[in-house]
Image (cartoon, rainbow, N blue to C red):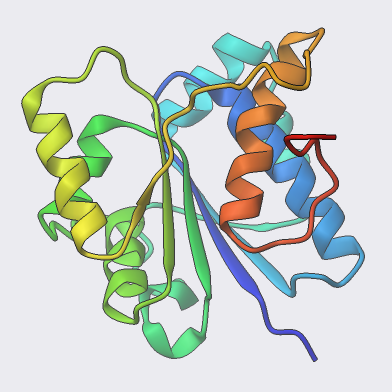
Length: 189
């Protein structure tokens, strides 16, 4: 049986649409048994940003287990739980900095630390522009540690017609980076 377990961390960076679309994709993958578990950590700021940007609180309607960011008893606070991938979507520069420097002061940064130490897949959907040298150096540090920095930069090859379609170009890239099956536009089609 497939034992793909995913951690999703949602920080307070702008870009709640990315988190919403990612959770929708993961819900479908969970329903068709492509993945076996999704654990979500969502900060209070992330909830506030979601409500402000999307005008709803639909994050609480997803069939995933949500963990408080202070809950170090969550299964993915330990490598023995076997979570295979962690996606931070969107990822604030503050969260990226704490991950880069091994500051495991909450469940998000502890889980990222675990994923890196176990040599599993960490994907950070970075949401900031412009970048300063501190941001760039932190991205370099995470990359050298084995993480993947995926800037929230939409593509236009598929000629998206709506904001959702445009944001989905980024989410589809994240899903591909996580080695999860996904039907989406591919260059040359």
